[in-house]
Image 1 (cartoon, protein in one colour):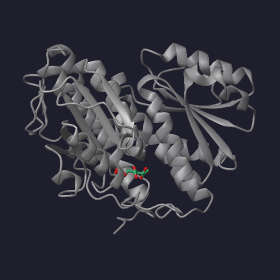
Image 2: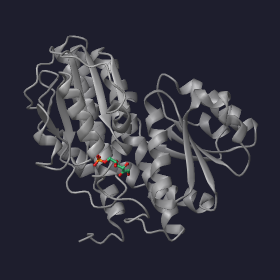
Image 3: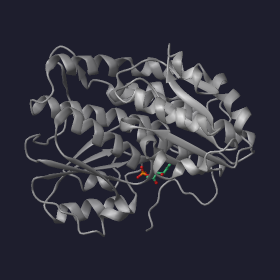
Length: 362
Ligand code: F6R
């Protein structure tokens, strides 16, 4: 049932090109630069968005904030559900609550949704599991169609959630007139290339395995990224913690100098998301600061970037893609890194200790 793979997690990592195809299938319309979501929701009925989720789904929500703000110019807050539900959030009838969940059963996410609805919000679910509890309580559901996810550590659901959030952002941007046809068309074309690009990353598994071999004895890792790649850093750290039990922390790279830089020494591998994008140069200067203090840098960088080699001991290259879609391509080597390290350490990859696939208790 693992299709020849030793673990569900690895199988699901390798299913990502197919999962993405299914998320995007039938929804991209280059002929008029639109996306078809098939949801009954008036895109003009709200002027703020709250994206609410837990864990990996929350990081997808955080990427969603960058996407929706960039493309649709609506203010977005990304919130951890267990905080949202108890903090007396400012919500009204002009709020859209987007809840993201693989299982559709996470109790904190469900209760946060109920809280937002009680205060008059409209609601949209971004969900994997068909007919799950959350889908029965939202005004509309956008299924991500990633297929069943069995490994406790979420992988293909994450990239599918990111693709779904991109679709929502484009849909809102087009409907509300903030995203012009040419820019939308470029994004649609890039989305269509994603399954192939992720396939290319998967073909480079041996590069990641080499990095894992080199660093799997480390007791701590730091993950850094900026802008839309900040959530990628957090997701990479979460994957590593969950299945290898190695302590890993993530920071937006620009925060380094405000404290965490004190941690840098030759025993702390630092994974940096240094792909092409508006903040590439800024990230590079953060990398230099780490390197100058003796840190070991593992960079995730864009194909063709030779400059990064001057600062990073190890470089994992990923194919070039629109910067707003870079989290989808860049998280894949981080999933593989966590997987390879956990296997080297002899961990139970599919059933990590203390974790459940779906968290239905508070
Ligand atoms: C991480 C992981 C958890 C879940 C979180 C939310 O790999 O699996 O952090 O992402 O419990 O679960 P869903 O998406 O089912 O609401």
